[in-house]
Length: 309
Image (cartoon, rainbow, N blue to C red):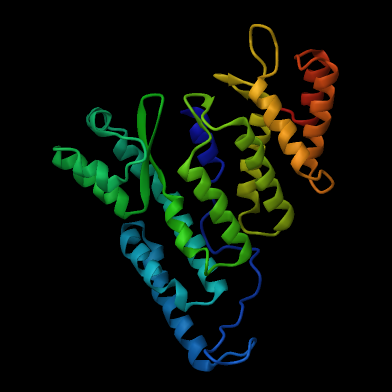
């Protein structure tokens, strides 16, 4: 559970108005040439935006805020939609510890153990329990925008980033790509019980996509959060985890699937614009010389190019 939660902890964002976002884009009036807007368009978008703000100021209003944004995000500018989606994430992040505490109760954990099914929504899990208190807790958490995860025998809520996908058509490019990254994390967390639960190819691909985000949007409000995610995936790429090490403990040989995955990734992608791929390329070339076995030269390479924090 520690590794799983570290990825979520890395994504904790400071609350408040997002910074580092480009100037507002104009709202285009229907039937008007691109680049023009009407006072009515701007007035309506502003009214819709302002009406959302009180809902995003109180975590108790998350269900109302989610319903309002789902119904009205199309009506605001891309700049305003970006602000609203980030404010929603900030509120989700700020409220999460309180939800974790409620789910940590022993009686709740015992009941969740009997009803939990991977991939089930909070509403589906709620329908599967006869315990009224747990049913209410699950239903409420789902309405507030969370879903249930498990690791090391413990059940806990996490932000359901997949629900943010509906905002991708309205937000600015960096937050559109950020939502793609985070919804992938939400759909399939990389690790559980101190071991990887995704393929080595996916580990390296997620490192690459997060690196590309930071390089494409260095001033994005979420660049720091994605950089933390990149650091985690870089570590997983070059070291693995305790229960899924890159090099087998007994003989020091590199995991064969990782060898194939990394070689395939390097063959398909140019390395000129990716420091990550350049590191990985040097790593694989050195491993090939050493028969894909861990030795002092490999350790030295990792410590220099991908040191553990």
